[in-house]
Length: 66
Image (cartoon, rainbow, N blue to C red; front, side, top):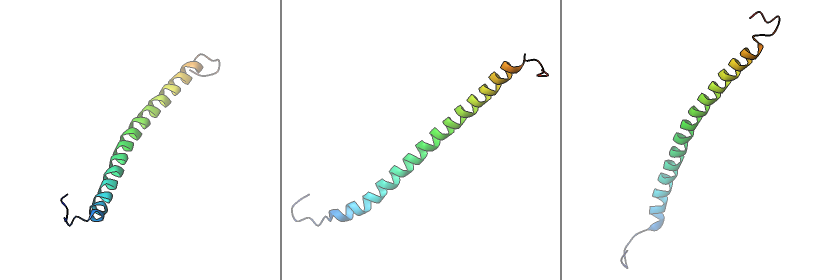
């Protein structure tokens, strides 16, 4: 900036600071939501696999009725 310019840096910081903060929070929320959806799907699939494994392990037990 040239000498004698009337730039008030606190005004710039006061305006850009909250904007950058909102952008950072929005980015973090979007990223977290995507990871949460992937995590839930992995958990659900692992649970189904555990049920299948448990069922297969107990199919040949006497008195199981299967």
